[in-house]
Image 1 (cartoon, rainbow, N blue to C red):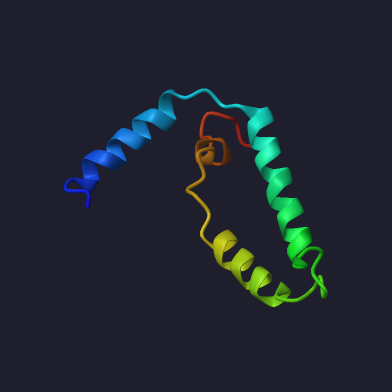
Image 2 (image 1 turned 45 degrees about the vertical axis):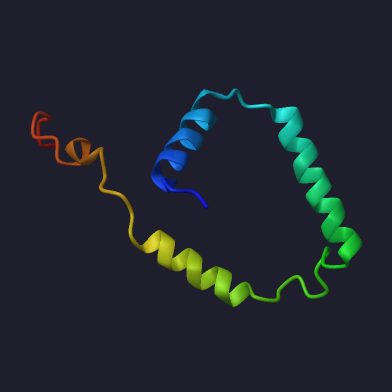
Length: 83
């Protein structure tokens, strides 16, 4: 049993931060996961549109709250003459 989970998580974050990204290794992992899904019969899905309503609802929720506009000053620029 781990006694100091926060310390372990901090160590793991530090390890990840200082580890270089290995795109080739990551691609091999994705390909292996794809192959496993195919062998298990869960890919490709039998109905590609199954769950699309959930995806649409989630996309709407995520897109409804946009970050504050950082270019707001460009829209209300008072230095340009009115034309």
